[in-house]
Length: 167
Image (tube, rainbow, N blue to C red):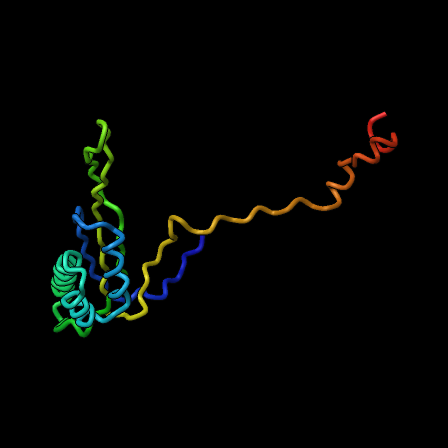
C-alpha cells in the first residue's frame, strides 16, 4: 500500500475534551456551530455573550483549557489570535432515566441527556483531521452485465408459448 500524503502535516494541533456535561447535545450544538471555524479570540467572545448560558460557560472553560494545552505544547504562541477552532464536535453522553408520576398510577419517562464536547485548535485555518470518517460513503455495487442476464432469464410470455424454457 502506498502512503497517503497529508495536506496539513505541518499544522500545529491542540485538543481538549469535556465529558459528562449536563446539557443536552441539541442545545450544545447550537453554540458549537457558532464557534466552529472561528478564530479563538472570537470564539471566546461568542461563548461569553451567548444566550445559552449553561453551555457557553462550559464551552468557554473548554476553549481556555485547549488554549492552555496549546501554550504547553508550543511556548511560542502568545495570544488567542494565532489559533483557530479547527474542529468542534458534540456527542451524546449518558442518559439518566427518571419517571414522572401521572394519573391512575402511570408514570411517564423523562430522559435527562448529557453531552461530550471535543475541541481541536490549530494554527492553520484550513486544518481538518485526516482519517476516514466512520460513517463514510459505502462502495456502490456494480450492476451485472446485460448480456449474461438476457440468456439466463425467460419471460412469462415465452413460457406460456412453450418457447425457450427447459424441454
